[in-house]
Length: 556
Ligand code: ATP
Ligand code: MG
Image (tube, rainbow, N blue to C red; front, side, top):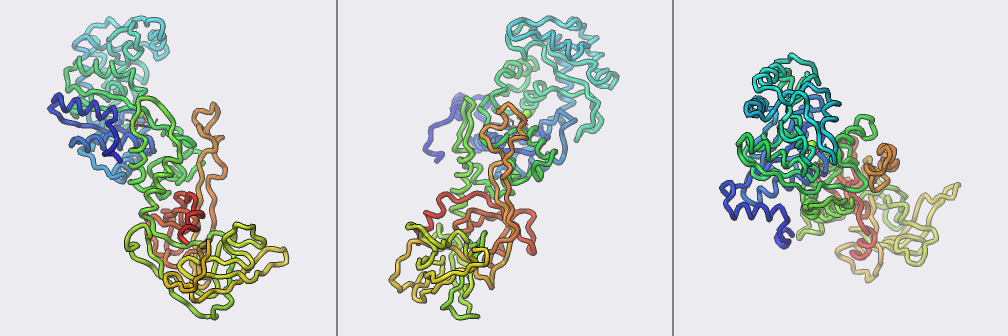
């Protein structure tokens, strides 16, 4: 697919830079997560973009933790981020931390003070906000703006030494209080935070702001193309200003539209709220749009990369339909998942003309989408089978091609059976269906000459194993939970998880492997949950089958 499409605007920029020999024709990108939560599908887009573009143009990508907010960051998040990036199939050149640059950034700040381009401000945060003015009115200078270089150097050193309380002083860049761009009105470069940092411990009590850390980190690493989301467009003049005044490597920032996915939320802060309040079972709850949640749900790295490729990069915000993500996992699992049979809502089918106590071992290929079927497994067959309750109707309508009195159907990988009779309990509920099988109709060697329209799945009662099955639906019941103007936690879909404690599965599923996809024929794609043990199997439904029923009819 990617060969056919035309270049996106970021590829155009890179190709132009290579053609003009900018930065020696090199491409060096970085993925810069803040370790304050688990990565979500929006980050996957940024990962695929940063790593993907570098790969395409024979460049490199750094994984850089943007860890300048000590209060919210944690090593647990660092570990999960590394796992997720690797799982998606990417390898970084260097694992780096903005906090490793704290000394260097401090020296950069000193350099700006020496040039008369930064000053220590004692104004309170509210005063600074007022000084900034509004987008339509120019700001006013802080009374501390004219401090001497010497005084600023002394005060900044004293800030570092811990002489002041949080919020008592800040370091500001001296740019232009009348700039039409609010970010250029003497932005804050450093603030005081007496907080423990996940890497530097208590070494520092001043921390650089995003704008003074990000571009400088890019320059230190000689990043050529620094990709970020559209909300950073107004920060770009400041990004360039710091780099120019410090006369460091000329990294450049480019912006693309963030990924918004409907029926879910892509904000770490809000996802953290769901975790903390206990609306979900942790960051990797299979309903979460986190990479770890998608992985636990049964999504494959290839399906997520395919999704990111299909949505492409845009210069304008839009919202992507969740069904596209579901389409991508279906496409991938259709090709890779092994087919198995499981009965989720059982009713007993007794084949009255099949000898009691007799077993037959049938064979079913693992994957009919691949030549050779990727091998096969054995499926025991016997006189009593579990079938889905919905595959039998007492009074079937005309086009019901499954079981009902007098109707014939094929049992997948087995025989054609004809329904003869059924049994009801005292409440009128059907408890048993009776049928005769046609011995000459065995799959693969059918000489019966009988044609049936429907095929149903089944599991032999005597051989069935059981497993818990978890069926998921969308986490929110409305399209735009974040933009609905009300508390998003009140918009959760109450039916997003349905647990079936025990379903019947064919015996081969006992050896199912974690991380592998299985198609439960006609029921969807499933994979083992991390809670699963050999004694208590647990399967997650990754995604439903589209038109599952119609498809099976065609195959016969
Ligand atoms: P969040 O609001 O969820 O915390 P963030 O932007 O603060 O997201 P970071 O850890 O700073 O999270 O993000 C790392 C990188 O991922 C950044 O370059 C950011 O632009 C990018 N990114 C984050 N969310 C999205 C998204 N929805 N679509 C595309 N890129 C994203
Ligand atoms: Mg961020």
